[in-house]
Length: 249
Image: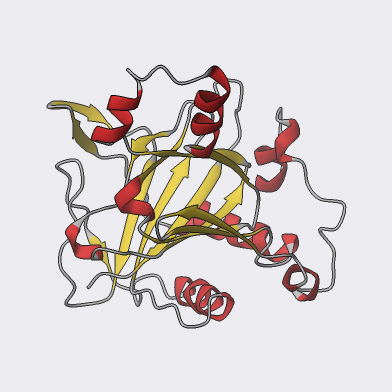
């Protein structure tokens, strides 16, 4: 059974497209880019399909079998635990070290994994004016793998980082929610109407379904003002691989 079939097995959200045999990336380029203004200088951009499905499945096979994946021990709320997903880190030489949750990943160079340069070029082409020099890869080997609420606000990325998230394999839900502020905490004690409270809650939360070959970009003050997560979905058995391209200053 092919890896593509294994990804689809038992999950209706991971079916192969009827257009897997399309003529290259031309159809992919016709996909509508949607920009979501989150307010106060935060923006999310979604390109539903960066490349043809056939090409994207070939990338999935390469990433699944050729990347030196590891599942590290991290610290969360002062406790050590196994990270609930596999990871790998790639960066240009001379950059500041990445450290998150008490873990410092080994930084492979782009020359260690040359095919990834092609993906970097594809993302740069899709996002004119953007520049990335590092890549954090994550592999979710089923619905029990996840990433908890967090923001990518490490100092190495600067105050307004742009992060481009490219997904392969099983589609997963991606959530954003506004970081709590002093004003928002005070509003909880206000005697506002139910309708106003519901509208505020809607404005403070967003969700996206990140499908095979999709590219989601977070820009501006998104990391300062918002948290994001990929929650558990225990009924899923299929694999998702996600690549987040970043600029280390």
